[in-house]
Length: 436
Image 1 (cartoon, helix red, strand yellow):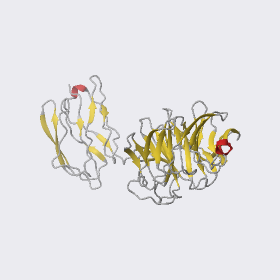
Image 2: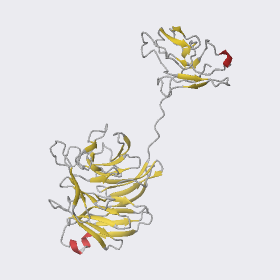
Image 3: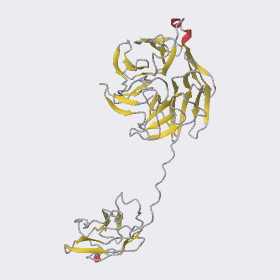
Image 4: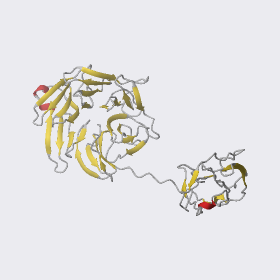
């Protein structure tokens, strides 16, 4: 029984349709019937009383010689009409892709199966200008961000309102904890956990009060709440990592290797790893080093200059390898925010760069001092674009295909020193599992 048919249609242009010829195979007689059509007006029909023949299973699509110009012919490669054995209604399946400027509205047939001998059929296919593509839904984010130039840390809701804020001094790290409390620093030496609802300080550490640090310049540039309730503190100046219990008793101390000791440049962000080691960014040396708990080196990576000469400063014209952040990915690679290297790079354990985003890779955006990073559950990467000036967003969320999924630019509440942030929700969905 004859069960299917392939249909060829033509699209119209302001200049009308041009003459073309083709052929279809008649399934019952297995003979070629010519198909010749001419249409010189601006008919609104894609196919206006076009002729076609049935074939059991489809033999071949019509071929055109010479091929019509592409602006004239709109060819749907395979529109298949299936006729169930006991049904009188035809079901139309059309391909997923067809010319963007036409829309197939209706093809309907009511035919007794007994009449499915070779016959001519009239198909009315109406075309209208294709509707404009649906706009992408708005991308909404709530987040916390801090800018020491404005002395402000704030939680911004998805609708853009300031939900909470607090006055700060210099700051290079922050965390919103699962409890909703905020772990932040209020000065280079003072780390505190605040309850945003009550405004109360529920935990704090002041490095200048430690007996080991008396008479020594100390700066803290990284801290992290650990599983089990302890807190990791990275002290520059004393060149050590401390693990503190909730009561401030010292659980562990890890010595750091610093080639040129400097309380402001010894370290930037530090993160505890699942294997028990610590990933440390040594800003002054342009070096990411993984330390074992005994202070020995498990791995290190020198951030490259990519053949460029260092240039002083902080903005888009400066350049260097003063690394700020590093995250160990699930695949074992390390994602690095290169600071004034204006880039994000992913490196293998062997030190091979397998993915990178450089200063001018995003259309209309320049990266400056790339500070903290966050890998979202989607795989997108949140980049803090510090010291980039008011023409560039301070926060940029990019896909692995280097497309901007979301960005934030606000030089009223924040300024040119927005160093740290954390996305808290995406389009109404809380972010509870991210890497940062």
